Image 1: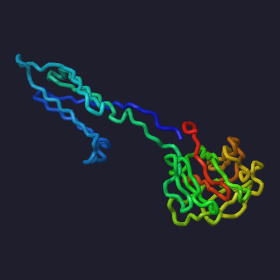
Image 2: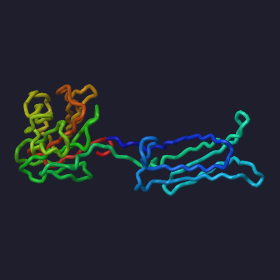
Image 3: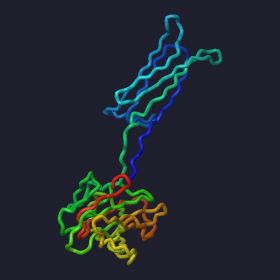
Image 4: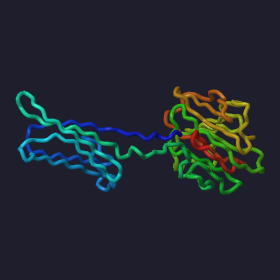
Length: 276
């Protein structure tokens, strides 16, 4: 899934004060939201800036600009302006604070959830699943629900030759770690839509025979299979990048992608544009 791009946010504030001794203090926490919550007490990304202002030797207030760089490359820039308003001397302080997280990258790409079944293990930072015992099955769910029009695509990396068939892919309303999830997804009687071979199974029942002519049971290492929920709630499956058409409708909004190391399938990897 696409990674969030770095961004820089400027928080602009303006303070107008009557002429007087001035002490302005700005404090920003890593997760502070003004008027809603307080910064976390244990955050290591907290910084502060203090501005003290006094009269010069001639007794006048002096306009100035001040910038202070922080260790984490955060910065605050303040500009002071003196002016009169309705016969009164005023001070306006304007500042801009650079987002301390502007250089950080956040990874929200799909991967397999770390809570897998007893016959599977994850490698490759959670992008690849391997089967532990060849004579069993191993379903794994995505780490988060699928978004509308988001393709959950898997490449089969390895397969055995014992059964002569393998692979299963689909979606489920059940969450990772749910104890109800069995070793074979077709055993579930609720909240599951799976493609096995060329048939669509809903809650363990064949609801769409010969849905596709591309049999994923015959997939070879390197072949791809995927699933997507459209923004209108239609279920689509993909084989080697080709949309097989709508398979079902009225899919719930929150579903997780499921891939099953079924039968001969022994290893598979999630694909996305930046992780081939």
